[in-house]
Image 1 (cartoon, helix red, strand yellow):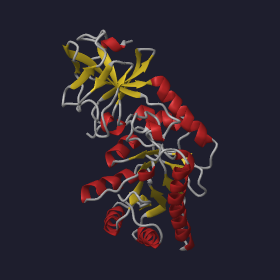
Image 2 (cartoon, helix red, strand yellow):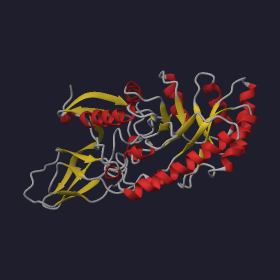
Image 3 (cartoon, helix red, strand yellow):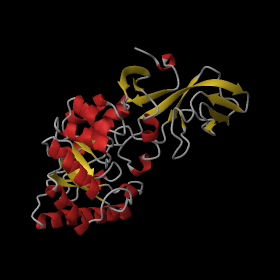
Image 4 (cartoon, one colour):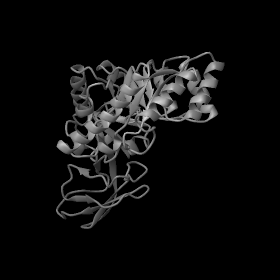
Length: 354
């Protein structure tokens, strides 16, 4: 069993105690609710962790890309939602072929894609499962709530697709601090979603799935009548940027780095820059290192100011940088070391597109 000192740097670490507590906290919440958890894969991209989430009561897994859905299905997880749009002949062909293996759900917000997918599906004698994607104010993907969504739902049925329901992501509301303002804003977004569900059902179309939510509002969206599943994902590993907006969960990720240079009384330099940890949402902080302050992330280096000149820190020592944005950091690594009591208990493989 490796010690931290034995790990080649830079390396991605996960605190197993924090990960397990986060998983348990979320599982316990949803086990008591009619709404169920369909956690997001993109936040960790580890098939073993997806399987653990299923063991802890998840009804399926959410993902962001077709290749991720293919890997999940090949690993034995059949209930998968691609909470995203795809377009183009080759990706739609692949989705149709995947639909022959498992009833994978996909978000739809475009009539041309509906028609294209319908043609390909008829040729392969399969009826892919779709959700109409609703824009809840994020202004990214999705059609407007109400009659626009009703019309698109009708078009999916006319094209020979299997309409299963609707989805929406109120991502712009996740980074609101907990409190009455957030409660009201999320409830308004959920009202748009459920009103659209009711309109589709009034048109004579059953709506089985209403999928939404994230780690920052799981207990609000997860409590709203009519919602059937929640797509929270960041809760499992959590990062220091998201943590203030999701205080029920502990940051679990860090990047281990080695001191490779020292200017006495002024600075040290670590061997981990933006190729090892994301600086997209701000600089990470150093763990358990009072007297040191990270000043920048270069491509391969991280200059650190020495604030306390009495600090005993030398070339060859190792430090941990708390991951500030885990989505942008996970994709930089091929493996993640599971740490407990200062030792490597497990090594996880992070999936990448082939």
